[in-house]
Image 1 (cartoon, one colour):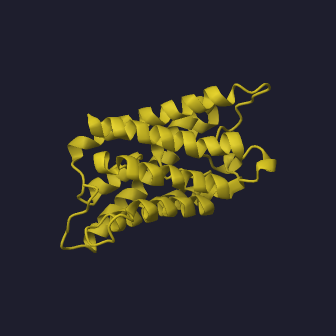
Image 2 (cartoon, rainbow, N blue to C red):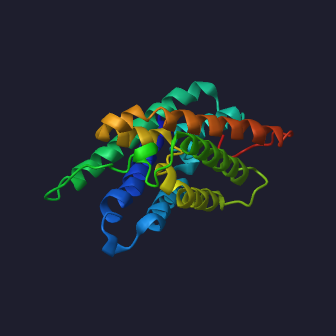
Image 3 (cartoon, helix red, strand yellow):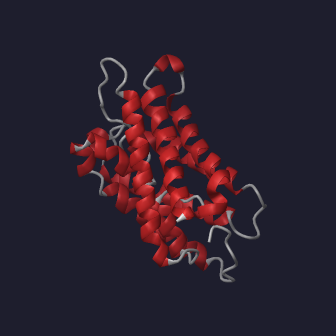
Length: 233
């Protein structure tokens, strides 16, 4: 239960910090954070939680990460449902807190609420094929970095830094395309509040990250034939 509580709190923080920076700060050009600031916020949310709960739950904060670790042979299948439920509930709480904060401003309009989308709902107008390829590729790389950074032969104590910076870089690349998901829980939490088009397009932000994550787990396992211990397990 301690692991699931940690995942709940950690995923709540990821959504509140990452999506919060987009909804509350990036909406004001005079603050000047833009895409770069939002990208850093997501990376820093993972970085901070990696050191806060990494030793408790592995700090997955993401159903795709849990599934990728399972595919890489570093997590037991029986733990997956509880991890994923905790992540979705935590993300939803983060989105609810964000909504309550944001709606406290006179004249508040929900708008996109940092939801993920493609086509007319892509920040840059990218269509489905581009969004699909982006989310699969970015999640693949994210899991590949996670598996490598947490390997027993990797430098000790720096995994959180590598993973947080990787997520920052992923956002710098893909915010213009899909608003960056690589995380089904994060996408679900925002789509619940936006409804309509966000729920209709949500399937992509489950399917693509899961495909990318599982592919990364399989590939990393294949190039690591000794199957040495990965600390996230």
